Structures are given as C-alpha cells and as structure tokens.
Length: 226
Image (cartoon, rainbow, N blue to C red; front, side, top):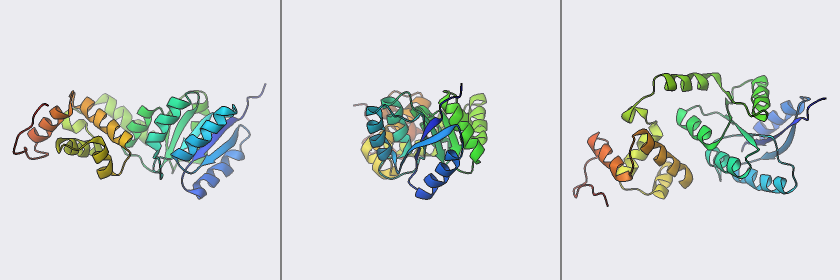
C-alpha cells in the first residue's frame, strides 16, 4: 500500500524562495505543499486554523531570519503548540549559536540554503519519520563540540559573550533584546544558555565573572547580590 504524501508548509519571507521550493516539492510523488507563510507569525496563524480543521502539515521548512517573528522563536512556539508537526530549518546562516538555539527549540533538521533539492527532500522525509537530518558541515561541528567541549568563556558563542557583557551592565532581558535586535524570548534563551555554560546560578554571578575576566570594568559602587 502506498504511503500518503508528506504535507509540507514552507515558511520564508522571500517569495522567490518559497516558489522555488514549492515547484521542486510538487514535482515529487511523495510530497505535497500544504501551505506557504511569509514569517513566523503568519505560520502560527495558519497552523491554528489548520489545526481546527485537522489539516496540519507533517513537516515545516522554516527560515530563521524573518520579520515580525524570527525562526528561533517560531520553532519553539510551533513545537509546543503542535507537537506532532516536525520542523526543518532551511536558512543561509550556519553559526553554531543559531544551530543550538534552533535544535533546543525543537527543530529536527537543519539545512543551509546551498543544499541541493534532493538533500532538502531527504531531510523532509526523515523529519516525517521523526528522524533528524543535519547539514554535513553542521554535523561535523557538533561532533567536534561533543568530542572536545569548550569550557569557561571559550564555551560561549559570540552572541552569548555579548549577552554576558550586557548582563554585567545591568541590562534587563528586554533591553538586551533591543540592543541585539532580537526578541525578548530569544534574549532570555541566550541568558539561560550563558548561565548554564558558565555553571552559574544568577545574573549577579555572571556580572562578577565578566568583571573578573576583564570584559567590563568594575562598577564604582561594587556588585551586590541583591
């Protein structure tokens, strides 16, 4: 008995990208494009309507850098609201901090936009079977991290180091988000990851580390634990 085609939603703010991916997927017998969305919020709105009618997609191809709602925020909301839907990231950005954030949010695949059409199709098929597919270069970097995990400040990504400095300056999560042009939710995630990697329990401890390591000057009045 033949399997039902995998239902795919394509989420990207560039129309030409969506149309190109749609044209390829619709030429395959085992896939069908259920919907397109221009950003994370558009995707969530459409998914809510589709859930009400029992027509949710099996897999979502999701870009990371989009207006209104970025992909990192969207993947967390999608997987929490629609746990049966699998998300594969399809993006131009391969920085490890983005990879970690996407995977932590629940993505089961991570592809770069220079991937070939067959690779995209493979990632979708694996995701539909609840299996993971990572871009080979991303997979190699993750393997290196596992075999030789960095420690201390070296464990932080460039973004997490910037967050550490802003935390040491007394910035709130919203102020960090405004400074780095990210969502407040993403800023909160970066702060959490930074504290975990440094094995710290509070923002005050993080500020002390930043001063000790010379990332920020000590405040004239000192750092309190209140």
